[in-house]
Amino acid sequence: MQENDPHFDDEIDLRELFNVLWTAKKLIIQITAIFAIGSVVYSLSLNNHYKSESLFLARSASGNQGLSQYSSLAAMAGITLPSSSGEDKAAQMIELIKSRKFVKHLMTFENILPSILAAKSYNNSTQELLFNQKLYESETKTWKNDEIPSYLKAHKSYLGMLSITQDKKTGFIYINIEHISPVFAKDFLELIIRESNELIRKKDMEESKQGLEYLTSELSKTPFVAIKESINGLIEVQLETQMMAQINQDYILVEIEPPFIPEQKSKPTRTYICIGGTILGGILGVFIVLIRHYS
Image (cartoon, rainbow, N blue to C red; front, side, top):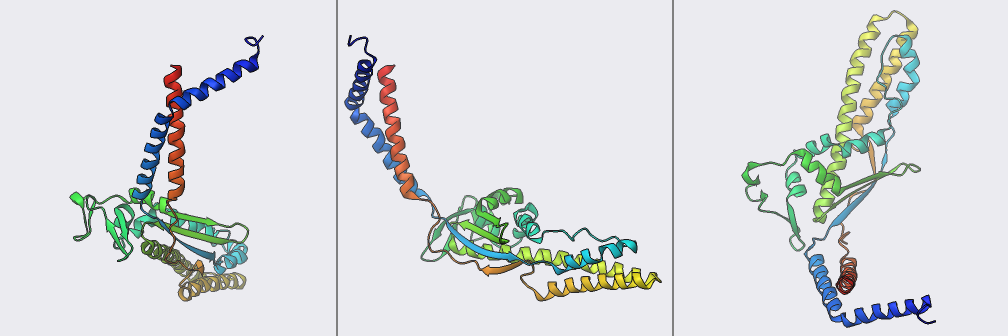
């Protein structure tokens, strides 16, 4: 009756399994200890990363509202306007910051490319960023074998450092940069914000200048008073755009919380790495013992 009882068979199997593991406990402990020590060594070899954060609100372009106001009158006059009335400036800024073109522009600034691709460690006492001498010679500021990395390679690493999101309800834009140097993280984030604002500002200024030249030319050609009034309204909008571009340094991104030098590291979490490595070693040790026994 005991041999036909399935509960009795399960009890024997569990007891056998426990005896197998208990007999090979030294091997399991050894494998677990190896993984535990290895995870500690690995976690200590990792560089600390620091995250500089900032908060912004996108400024609404008043010129866009003006263009939509006069678009019907401009169409009656045969004037073609750029389709920027419904343009989301915040989305435009976010995509610009993430673009390859923007990274290529950032590479024109000193020490940006080596800090992205060749950073090796950070000296907390001197606040100095140390570079991998196999890739970049910091004293002569030259790349090894004169092989300057392409902006495409820099763009991939740049996206790994960057985090930019927008809250759809409030419109707030959160921008973060993570790097082994807290000073570079803060300085680089400031550079990103300043240059993205400047590029959009120059673009709008150039478009506004071209629009003014075109509208002024059309104003002198038409004899109709109504059309002249609509063109004058459009000229006023373009002048307002130029005025806003001139007086606002934070042209699109209005600063609410500026970038800062972080004091606390963002990663790695060495405790979790050590715990995870130890658990992985224990599980692997159990599997090895069971496979050896049943095979």
